[in-house]
Length: 155
Image 1 (cartoon, rainbow, N blue to C red):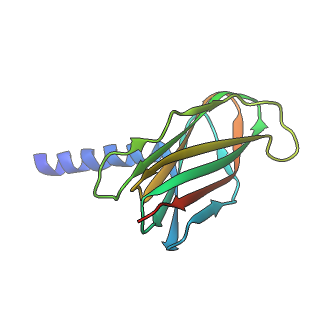
Image 2: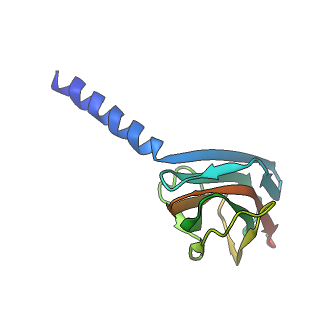
Image 3: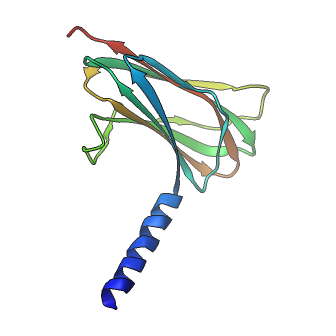
């Protein structure tokens, strides 16, 4: 009986922790060097959003990520956009690629009003990338566009 209660409690904790981050995963084909996500995603201050990009590069690569944001309603005090990489899902932890870039919401305009670029010129063996968006303050932000470009190195 104790084991059953423990398993139910563990399932509850896992469900709650998964509910705190909304996840979208994009898979690239073998040899593909560019993946984009053009569906608008709404970011609030209550739930972080994560976009995962899984590619299969043959060589070490340098990477560029481009993200476009727009205030949808109210203003976020801050939106932190962080980029992480890892070699495979067998590697439990993600490694930060550079520092998070902070964006302060501005008044709503027509279309996306901010473009953020992560440029990593150091070649790495990462095959999986995670963009994590964390909003604070009140309001909502639209993640209008995000794309990953990997630059193949010399084998």
